[in-house]
Structure formats: C-alpha cells, structure tokens
Image (cartoon, rainbow, N blue to C red; front, side, top):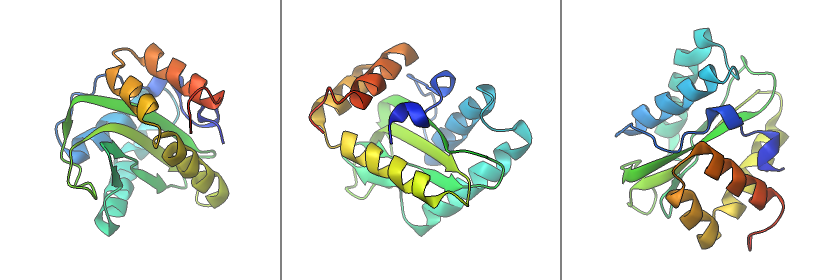
Length: 158
C-alpha cells in the first residue's frame, strides 16, 4: 500500500511543537481535523483511543520512529499523517531513544487489512536510513510529501 493511499497531504507537519507523547498525538490528530479527514467532534475520542493503544505497548518502534495508531468507527477509510520533531522527544520507544519521526494512522475497525498493509509499508520504508535522514531534514510539508512520493515510486532501497 502506497503512502499516497492513506497520508493526507494537508495534514503533514514538518515542524511539530509538541514535547510529549500525548502532545504529539494531539497535534497530529488536530492536523487531520484541520485537513478535513476526521470530524472535530471525534478528535478527543480518537486521541484517547490512541493513548489507550499506547498503554498496551509503545508504538515507538526504535531508530527515532513512532507509529501511533488506532481503529475508530468514525472514519470510513484509513487516514494518516506524518510529523517531524526537530529536537525529538521521549516516546517510551523500545530502544530507549527519543523519537523524531511520527506516522499517525486511524482506520475503520472493519478494514484490518488496510491497517496492516499501511503499517507494513511504513516499517519497510523506515528501515531505509537515507529515507529517514531526508525526512528528519525536511523543513516543509512539501518536502515530506515529495519524499513519500519518491518512496511510493521505489526510489529508496526499501
């Protein structure tokens, strides 16, 4: 599954201001609300659902990357966004390092296949050190979107 199938270009945030796990999740969910991908009325419930998922085990997968996600009945299709934190922050990652790259996903409960394919694509691309380095260096949402398009076109080693 390509990034273009689920990442909302209008919700990409190249310079996150949050300094905590819940802050990043809230900031990225807000971005999806602003982009019209989720309803404002569902915002708080979606943040709670993602935080509840985090209680099961951190989605900070290591190497400076976190993939907070949840399933929620308010969405009809898989939606996601990308955020970059210049300084990084404690996301209780598996390797103990701060996270600076965030891919947030919200999917309908009845589409687990889409959810898994998106997670697989993200984890495959994020194994590429060059892709991650370029993402961390991105200063504008347009730069991130271009990198995602290049990844979709197999221009990285993943």
